[in-house]
Length: 624
Image (tube, rainbow, N blue to C red):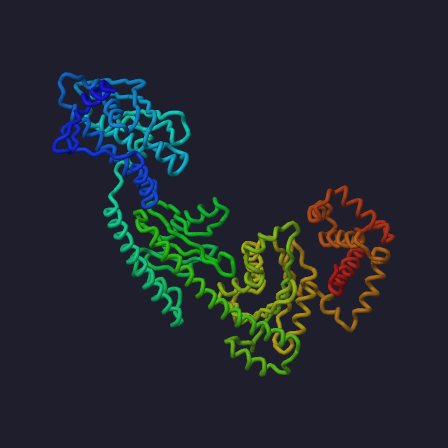
């Protein structure tokens, strides 16, 4: 026992002066390891494991530096020998039983080029106390010990050396194994080691946190002020343009609002010419992502970035609000995200208000049109008076259009939800063209009354073709067919014009989606409710067994015969329209001739009678 004490005394130079304990001429105190455990436990409970890790690492670093200071001036020892003295000091002070398992030191020009040291710790007091107070950890826990080794060797070497624990008793291993390297040699682990070794003091961190909170408070105050200003604009009944004026003035960057078809609703701070290339890149971006943005997103473009957020209405994306950062990064992403979110919400409210007003007006117009075609108003004067209330002149010529629509088979429900309705498509077209008309909606049908004075010299046929092409682009997976009445004069007789349009649309096809009443020729004039039964008798007589006991197969044959006659008996063209082979078409025509009791369908007189009968059938019977 005496020899062990002398060995300990020789290493640490323990002495007592005036009843006080000194180690290596430094006043010291003896404490139990359980007291260290209590400190460890309270620190973890009060400041958390991460901050406690930094606290003990720095504490150990200071202890290691002090022990290194006692030996650094000993000229009798080499640098490696001084380094290897560390485990002995560490052990002598009761922290752990330490020994070196391997070492590699390479010097160059008096400086350390490479340093690799592996030590083994046994009976770590730090691991022992952690297990006693918290049980086994999932990671190494000897923070004071790694700090001691790091501080000790760093002081001797003259540059930062860090020790990292690979195994730890506190994590369930049989002993603690750790390794020391120069900071530059740790590579990808260097940032992690620096993170907790240079943790800010609590007061400094609180000071920085307070500064951040102050910045956030000011930012929130600015967002709140902008939001209040924008809300006031809504209350005043102002437009999206006035909203964007405020935002552009506040944040001093271009702002734009556009619909899902990239049509500009309004913009501030950028010209149309400068925005065009940015819009093109945005189109490409959306196309590559299936046209979907559902949250605040940063979209790059040449020489800048776009901060964009969707505008929702009735759970559908109806447009986008964007901030444009020209030739610079988005430095205030969080605050600008908050602002653009509020701008988007307010735009949604304003668009909803406009849409509600428009729907109300459209409903009034739709009801008015239904009243007109039903004959509620006995005179032109009474209709004209009411039309004046909606800024519509019905004193001149007009057309009635019967527009039917049907959804294609195999169309997914989601595809329909994400697009505008046929009604919205038609209303949008005439709004863009600045043509004031009456629209009424019926099941799978839209009725349109178009005054000639609204067309400004354009033909009604040209307008309808433009409408159908527009709808093909805007309203996917829907087949539109239109029937156009003859030009009428007396608005009180609009009901008759509607009947003309309804008759005409029955002859419209996918290939020829627009039929005018004039296309029906004499048959359109001759057929009316009074002679419908007589017309049916003629149809029955002409079509014979083809029209008897009608079923699905016979309807298919009737349609085949109609296409054949319309195409002037051209087999190839008819087969193409029916998506049949020529041989398949011939087979059907043979069946038709058998039912008709005829040997040839190419006789001009026979073709005329048959086509007349089939056109009459389509007009009086909606199933064909």
